[in-house]
Image 1 (cartoon, rainbow, N blue to C red):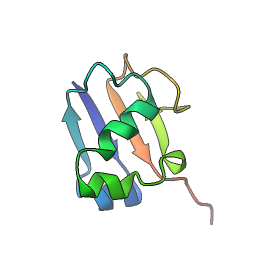
Image 2: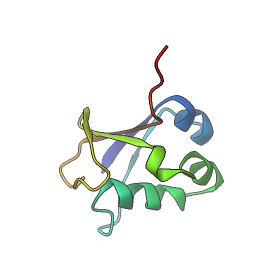
Image 3: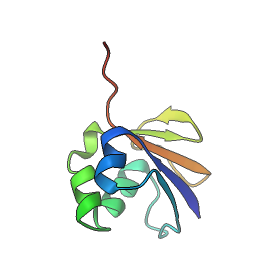
Length: 84
């Protein structure tokens, strides 16, 4: 089981701040995770419709989409940050 934490408009589109999920064995990377989440329903599909724009943090450390997520206790998913 892994804790997923959603930020900004990802959170708004999904409709929740966080959740814990049992991921299938086929979900090995951030890319796999986003693809899996997209299939969980309309809200998820909308939140992840531009997967390359999503940033990923594993255990509060930013990682590339191709990094393995097998040791993750927590995965954060969020849109690009904007400056101001």
